[in-house]
Length: 319
View (cartoon, rainbow, N blue to C red):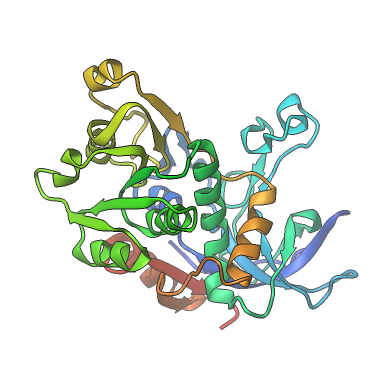
């Protein structure tokens, strides 16, 4: 990893220059950092990472406005985009994914239509969690939730914590697990009724749930989700696996006639939904940002994130 100078952005039509205030380090960033790949997609050139970000627009009619930015920019012309599924667009551009550099820089050019105004009630360092919250909202939408359900969240990193909070907001009782004690405690603080520290055996596999969210990308967590969910249940695969394959026990999936549902990012309206929930006080972000670094210390920020000693690590290029 290296830090160096870059030319200031010159926005094309429909784009604005953004002064970056804060960037969250995501699990997918750590895949790039650790493996040089996410699944079958490999790095082919030096790439600026960072897609969870907020900043201040510097030019045009919205100059001076604080915004969160949807990192995905689908084509808006294909049949998937026209059907409201831009997250699945084959021609989507995405910050921090080749060929588009990400937000770990002081300034960059962004599509103006992907910028959503931030209220003063949401601090810059918390605003990086809004894209993650959008994914949690999308995952909950895909889960076909109903009143009275119980849910399991397997993997209690930042995305798992926000899934817990979304599920609690929707009235579900939640069981959560993680391999790290501080994340188990955080899951309880996020609203989990039960939270288990996982060792060689996962006690949560014996706690039945109606719907399960695998949020770590780990095969063992996926197996726990499959064994815990009741017959005819649904398992949402939110985490990103290391490597190109994931493995799971086929027998319980078949015997219980389970649905395995992958989750791909968020849909365009979800960022504004996330902002509305946080600004209204219906859903809180407090306690999830545990580490804040300047851009000069970005290498240390990544090492901190890889160590998984906290929750969300944030880099603040403007500080």
